Length: 106
Image 1: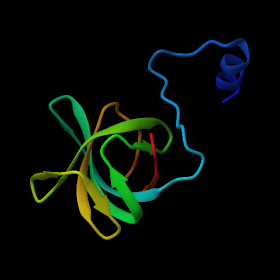
Image 2 (image 1 turned 120 degrees about the horizontal axis):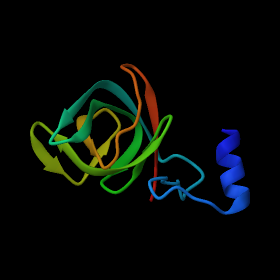
Image 3 (image 1 turned 90 degrees about the vertical axis):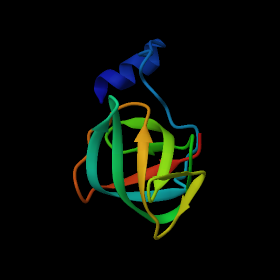
């Protein structure tokens, strides 16, 4: 954390570092399982609250944009509270089963 603060103060930014533009989360997602599909991380779980669109960012211990959302093996544009879906992420983030992740607008 201290290193991150120093990078911000000095104006240095990691090329792979992704920030969150909005201040308040628009939704929450509970992870049931994490898989690797075609070298991408896929999180399977339930939308706890709010609405999730492709392009939004998932934040846990790291941040990653959502590339694709699937429900019942079909790609969908968005998911709402109560939906059990799979989120394909652009970057891998560390997470555990049962962990609740926040979702932010891009």
